[in-house]
Image 1: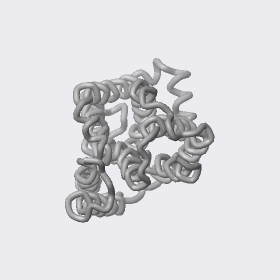
Image 2: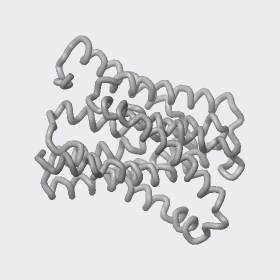
Image 3: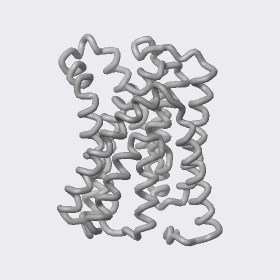
Image 4: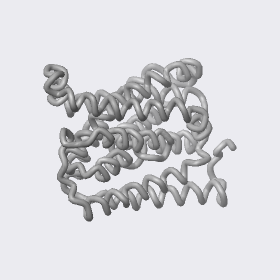
Length: 268
């Protein structure tokens, strides 16, 4: 892996982690295009530290408020924990299926699923009275949002897209939907990295140098920061239709190559 490729992968991770297009799907696609076989999994896990730093910086005041006043913020804490537990349970139950999906055989279908979710989100926002705040959620709402996040464990399904769609189904207003989705990404990214560390260490750093790691993580952090800021404004004021069109086209192209063109060596 060269520093240039590390930079590209870091930028893609940072942007796609928070834009509703799936960072895992894009990284997997780029690894196939660049022919990265050694150290790719380890590098992907480390890149998540950069995106974790990005969301912590953007929401530093909210995070500090929750840490400083845990009792006052107890309901918010419980909702984050509940959603995270559902996602974690799904990751553990479907671990074998998730591993098998890591070769990219369902990547195109997952991009299409992201497009469908974003389309549904747009319809929900337009036709439902979405004015609920996080404290006004029912106990089962965070469980549903956690379930939606669990689907996004598959490469090609956007975590932010899935959780924002889930929040819209729960009739959260746009501002609270954006905040809850990105606050939920903190335990999701951290927990995901922790769960994947044994596998990443087993694969090792073969082909990945320390300078590549530094460049990749820095790029992911910087790109992630701007992606979060951009998405907050977009979710609260604009439609996500453009991302639905993009992921639909990308999904069709991936499937076209896998079943017809065979330009990329998918390895299966």
